[in-house]
Image 1 (cartoon, rainbow, N blue to C red):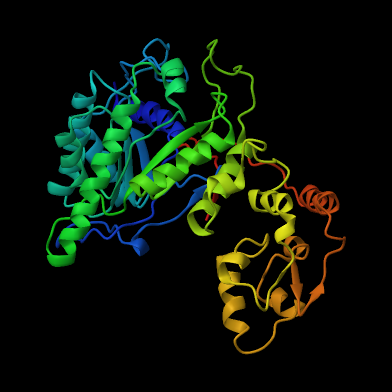
Image 2 (cartoon, rainbow, N blue to C red):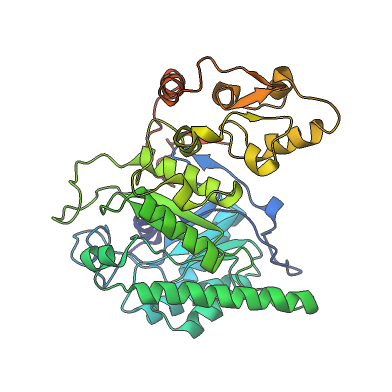
Length: 425
């Protein structure tokens, strides 16, 4: 099979793995090498569907021994198969880099023969990139659950980030849709990575020349909508992954029906993009705003309101905590006000040391007042259009959302071949 045909098949097959970002790392550059993995050395360009396109995103192979019900590459699916050699992966990366198409590599793979064999081939590819080509650029590698810990540990020496995808949010769902995968293998690989990352960080505190290990951390991916779990179950799992394994990111992928199976939603079902978006918003609240999963959702409200963002939804269910006075509220309380973000909360704290803030000051600080006005007072004055009533406020907020809704973005994987996709810089 010609290399161009392989590339077309394996680049297209990689579009379902969204745990991919070019966030840079602290990997030192080697003299005489090419590329740069520093934060400023990664070009951030984005396709219409929001995915980063600065990386060459490919599978090593889509020839898989597993039969996961939801996967396009499952062994029983009739689809064209292809496989790169480690040499071909390295050569492609260097040629794309020299033509200024990419700044790094995202390499994933189906499970070819067995986890150990697949992991060994992927490790050979990144070792060739670093050793023979002296490539200093960003490399994100997919860890294969169930592979020997020594192979995963070896690969971690050469890459900037690794991801071990958990994919399904419960053990029950794994048994139903991916019986050949084991939760213990996935969690074990995550734990191994976190242990080695922590050890490398400790070593570098005492020895500046100590080798790095996955310096940009690890990520994972969760599929949304393929199984009946509620948003609460998914968010609790994410919270646990952040706390237990210090994940850099948990990515959420709305299930796209690509194969027909009795245990899956209909192949004609629309992907749950809005639900995916709400989970990303809630994930941000977990990571940067001090919220807990059990605060945002509970057994009585196990799913997010698709008409409101999670912070507004939480505020309306806890209206007794509002309004808050912006001139006296603590930082943690300001962060819980809809329309006030991390930057604007810090601006408020800094400015009010000098003078008392009014409504115009908040406008200049870019507080989103169309939401915040219902939950704050300035110098004791309430500026909301309606009284503190959850039904009235909900009506105002949903009306604002409806009038500001834009046309949905088309969901389409970036192609290396058609040249028709619009790229937003």
